[in-house]
Amino acid sequence: MNPAHLTIKEAAENIAERKISVTELVSSCLKEIEKHNTDLNAYLNIFDDSLEEAKKKDEELSGYPKKDSPQIPSLFGIPIAVKDNILVKDKICTAGSKILENFVAPYDATVISKLKKHGAILIGKTNLDEFAMGSSTENSAFGPTKNPHDSSRVAGGSSGGSAAAVAANMCLGALGSDTGGSIRQPASFCGTVGFKPTYGTVSRHGLIAMASSLDQIGPLTKTVDDAEIIYKAISGGDDFDSTSVKNLPLPSKKERKDLVFGIPKEYFSEGLDPEVEKKIRKTIEKMKDAGVAFKEISLPSFEYALAAYYVIVPAEISANLARYDGIRYGFSHQEAKNLLEVYNKSRHAGFGDEVKRRIMLGTYTLSAGYYDAYYIKAQKVRRVIKEGFARAFEEIDLLLGPTTSTTAFQLGENTKDPLKMYLADIYTVAVNLAGLPAISIPAGKIGNLPVGLQLIGKWFEEENIFEAAKFIEKLITSR
Amino acid sequence: MISKKDVEHIAKLARLEIGEKEKTKFEKELSEILDFIEKLNEVDTTGILPVTGGVELANILRPDEEVTQELEDKAEELLGGAPETKENWIKVRAIFS
Image (cartoon, rainbow over all chains, first blue to last red; front, side, top):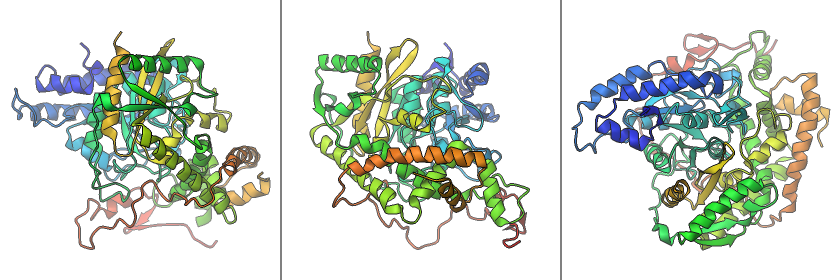
């Protein structure tokens, strides 16, 4: 048995029973990194102190009773990878950008303190599209991440490094961030589970902001159980994030057999690869055979989600990224003669193409005379989309559809046409606009390329998502 | 549609130096994206209030009392990221040249 191939749940059991040591577990992941990372480029930085941390954990373990081990924290000794837009104290945090190439994080993000508190071993930082802007990880200033199932293809994005690291057993689980699909889409492309929690359930303090009204941190894992373990460890209110919800509404957990699933017809319309559709339909049939209730649903204005997204996101980006000015931290151009030139030249040399494009677009739509026509209009359409989901959820508990319209595309296939790249998120962005929780789970393969199935739940009803996703996961893997 | 002059104006507002080649590129790309966004006008939004954030929470304030924060007494550490500092101040270039 290679410990790196274990799930978090299995590894935790093995550690509690002293069948494997934390050192063995961490070393086996480091071995996989050594084997695959040069080719895949999933990690930007591998923490050289992870083995030392593992040894400490092994010593700590002797303090826990051997038989009953409920006091052992849920992620004790589990090697976790972190997307490189989440701050880990004293470690470089690049956000995939030249402008932060040498930036050392002065504090831990709240999710990182929580992972540490739960005993996790942080093993390294993973690649991403620059500032999480992209759908393929090709926008990283440090080269693209490749898909472990076919290295001529993309891993998806923007959390492509985290997805590839999990898929190639280079860690047991990873953190990503999802603004328009950046956890679910790469999870789908790499054949892992990817979970985007309800907006407000996980603190973003210490996450490098892209579009603040949409950004959410979540886990990428091998199984739904594992995603739930990480989610439970990182969620909860936080004084450092004013959007984090302190007193969560009591979860209305339903029995699996009482859950009603909605099939949104907009998720099965033009543009969906027929082979992907076949896989999803097959799972639906299996579920029907198992007695699951389905309803056809329509989401009004769903087709406008992507357009609204590409107004709101660049607008928030243009404001959020104003902080990279070459003054307080990050890259600063040495040939600048005055303050204005420091700004202009540092930003010119520090930012990549997609970042510049979005800053420009956001600056335009927020500029005098255009604010109402673009930004306010988009925020109104966002309300229409959100209410569309709310109405659907009066009839059903969960929405089911594909995560992406295709399997992983070729490296370079969409890089010439920004709009074509944006379309990779067609099934995921609406979820962020509405602030809903959603998960992507593997639903088989076409050739050697994974297909992802997406479940979307009601606000704060993550319990129902986990319940349903575990059931579907079991159905899919059983022959 | 966006003109080259618009591109230059936006770049100035965004404090972003861009080269001649980039100007032509952005003129084309931004126009295409804005064309795509025009689609939003097909949605009737009469009487709809715009969304203002990710949650419906408002005015989240902590009690006005002293707290021991993680970042207290960390000025030096925080300033460590700045390209040039002097006596716990960030050094900047001349504003007028």
